[in-house]
Image: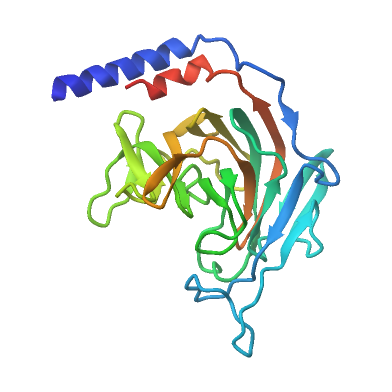
Amino acid sequence: MIIKLCQSAALLVTGLLAGFAASPLAASPAVSLLDPQLSQWETFLSYRHQDPYNGTQPTDAAGKPVAPLGVFPGLDPHGVFTLLQQDGETVLRVSGEIYGALTSKQAFRNYHLTLQYRFGEKKWPPRLEKLKDSGILYHANGPHGQEYFRSWMLSQEFQIMQGHTGDYWQQADSAIDIRAFQPEGEMNAVADITQPFLQTGRGSGGPGFVMRQLNAEKNGNQWNTVELICFEGQSLHIVNGQVVMVLKNSRYHRHGRDIPMWQGKIQLQSEAAEIFYKNIRLQTLDTLPAQYAGYFAE
């Protein structure tokens, strides 16, 4: 067993080293997903969640269920998602005051998404005493509000959070396999590129949350660059140039069976913290870039 694991690790490292000299990313040029009208996006806003929140639908003073605020084309009338001009650049501000998401109108399958972010100063209930939080949801499908916070689609989450950017969260019925150490007792599963793939998410018997391999975030108010590479059900979470998670076999689990989930929309979360995004660019891919192939070698 030790010999076999060593051989697997050696193959992985060999593949990674070989990839450093590979050609640049294939396929079409990267395109910007931001314009003054947010014409490539729609907005969904759910609720101003309060603390404590237990996953149930919010109610009014009379105890009647309250409907979510709904879907809006582009910029929303509540000012949760707004565009600013800073130093000659278009910047997306997400206030975080109302839970929801900016959702791409188009679904994507094989692509390289790049963006920059930094958190603002404001926080809102129910996270006033918690870390600032947001995230990229990918392969997003179906109606809005399918998960615990009634705010997001069935999807895979690339978490953006103070000290935790690159973490994975299952959203609704999603599942995926991640190179990670297994959880033990109260310890979370932790991503590691040298480890076998661990089944996670709905129907897997594994966790719905996995921590990133390392904290690659910049200190203070600096802009962080994150990259998400998706190709045929495989994905990579990259933070400031460092691969912090390797994932494959994207799927969802319903009615006792796994269903592949290799494409879908992209969502940027509004989750009780002010955050700024810029340089949101997407490049479609014809093949997985060679410099990353070694991460998936068995």
